[in-house]
Length: 297
Ligand code: TA6
Image (cartoon, rainbow, N blue to C red; front, side, top):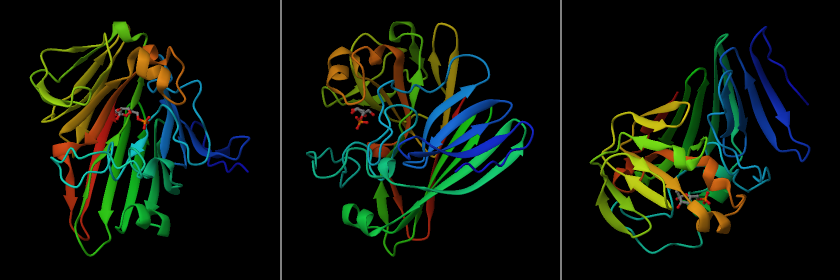
């Protein structure tokens, strides 16, 4: 069942994998992208030049209720494990899914817009269900607005449909495709405070981030542009509605223990995640909204 909304250069197609896994494929004169309805998960974005911008694991699942390994998982309404208070690094609540439930929920394709030949917009939505209310007792509407062009723009808008305020933490958990982990450095976080999830300690970044071991950090007070500098290209990330950024590479040992990763997968990816995490958690009042936005180019 393929519905073609195709003009000369622009294609927006609703497709299914052989196992019925649904996604939207976008092609325009700037780039191509693939977005799964499960999790409104962008699992491919590549411009018509250079390597793909997003990394996708060769052994990723495309199955019901299993998060895709790679691309941009939407971590919502909590990043990591749910926390009562922004500063509360409380013991893990194993009964609740890591990184929330939105990334394995089925979203709806709300609308599409072919702005012009090189820019295409799609919007996905997700609302509370009896299942979600058991995991998280709040009524909400979530929208993911994506603009596919030379820049990939992703806006995650949370609206509180409840009669009481609620707190969220979240992340656009972006996996970037890189030439090799030993070639890259991350600029833009110098002197920033971060929580080191490995030592569970607060630290201050000194200079650029280079990768020579497992790194799992939540940076705070980040308002400027982040640069991912690789051998042949620099990717720029600018966030809005956010002051926290997560930087992660599992390195050798954790990579071996992780689902849908090959032992060498850590060499070809790095996560730089646009977030509202820990102290950057957001309290949203009834009938109000908050938008987390990432611009990647
Ligand atoms: O964002 C970094 C992180 O929280 C790491 O600790 C690691 O667990 C990663 O997310 C992947 O999580 P996942 O639940 O997708 O396996």
